[in-house]
Image (cartoon, rainbow, N blue to C red; front, side, top):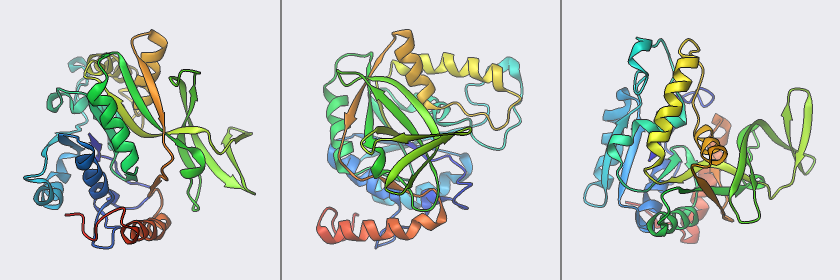
Amino acid sequence: MILAAGMGSRYGGIKQLDQFGPNGETIIDYSLFDAIRAGFGKIVFIIREELRADFEDTFGPKLRGKIDYDYAIQGFQSYVPDDLGQIDRAKPWGTGHAMLCAWAQTDAPFAVINADDFYGFQAFDLMADFLANSTDNAQHALMGYEVQRTLSENGTVSRGVCEVDADGFLEIVTERTQIYSEGGKIYFKEAQTTTELIPETPVSMNFWGFKPSVFEITKTLFEDYARHNFDAPKAEFYIPVVATHLITSGLGKLKVFRNQSDWFGVTYPEDKPTVEVALKKMHASGAYPNKLW
């Protein structure tokens, strides 16, 4: 699943379709290329209805004949309890709701990623192996990245900071919205407090692996969330809420994979040149062919 219904407010445009690679590739193109060679069998784009034609024009010719693909529409009314009536919103309900909106297109273990993040082949390879071979329907997964590999030079970033037990399972993921580097150290701010993070701290970059058993649980959680937030147009229901519930309720566990890949993405317009340079180097090194498609 590719989460691509976001509004890109800080970026100032539809960054899901912006071009970053040396041949005009989007960041999604690299995720698609890596997913296919890692062994994934289907792609589901989770989008807003008004983006469907653009997505089909951009990615349809590249994917046809290579992998099955489909679209899921993240609508404001999707999975909202009927008795709440018409919901007045201008932005999607969040990543947890987006995942739920792809239930009808999903009948197998699946990964969830952001459209505007570059994750690297190792992440797709590790997750594909887990999803293909794990037989425990209550065991899910999270791809962890070292926080030092995920920062932006152009402002603070939001990251899900992970606490992991001795067996490698997630204990808690806490959203920190103001992480930054200063003087060779990494910090996050919360209210009036500044806290240092060690560079190797694992963080979530919204690369998850789930078994289909998660959908019914997510539906129940979202319906409750919608009832409490139907009149809050900026409220968002995130995947970490689902993950936390799985852990605290005893309904599931999440294996945290620690990979050494560099992550990069585009939060601000100023991030684009950095991403373009990084991708050009990867093509030059042979990590990717001269042309992906």
